[in-house]
Image (cartoon, rainbow, N blue to C red):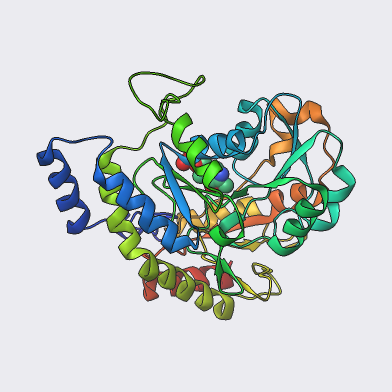
Length: 367
Ligand SMILES: *Cc1c(COP(=O)(O)O)cnc(C)c1O
């Protein structure tokens, strides 16, 4: 095997940052107003518009945004929240932090919460559904929305990986409360950061209050309940405004790389992402399956690609119901477990050049 020089290594993620972000941060530093200024408000307004929601409230991370969104929808002790086991563990942790219990329903071919498995798990304690748009691929929100409505449940979307995604031309934010992450590896980033979007003014107001120590609207260091410090800074919001300007370009670059892989990679050996007909997938990750009976198994394939200078990832290798804190719940999710052992994310971010993606496809064909 030829040694590969470091500069030709294709990473699995790389943030898109430029002189615009640098200038914006310096302006904030020189303004002297580092928090609670105009940039957070401007970022929230622009984010709501970009995601099809009426309102957006910025927080310190996707995790804090998830927690606050659940709390604002009244999720608390004694409640159950039905969610996907195939996600970053933060999804389930937010449910526990809100005082409630996660109930895991298995996934469908999109690797998202399977609507046909949800209703059997609804109990008198069920308060909300928390589906995830894993890898930036929209889940079956129409069916999940109908189930939520039929049973009087809140619907909170974990759209942390899905900024810019839509269904039938409608931004995810238009379907009800959604939560986004602005972490460094996400499609747009502020380093750390999160956003709750909603069409419910009461939810927006409650998230805004709770993130800021539940200050009373009247001010004067009066607090209506126990709150938190989950604020976003002006520096982060300034970066976020620049990142939103890039959203269309980064999304089309990801979709262009994904369309290339759809054509160039053998879809029989490596089944491709399953996308619902009306979904606009934003390819936070491009995830192939390496079926159990393949001539090269997933883990050795990943090591071989690494030797050839191709970074890959597994999102995620252990489903949440099999993680230590959640094992005792005894969830039965065989499809999620199978997916965890077969999934392989290949580089799809905007920093992947045409030559890079050709190298990825050639390596997959050769191995
Ligand atoms: C990134 C992510 C989170 C958590 O977001 P942070 O900003 O890292 O706190 C939650 N859920 C999913 C699906 C994520 O990808």
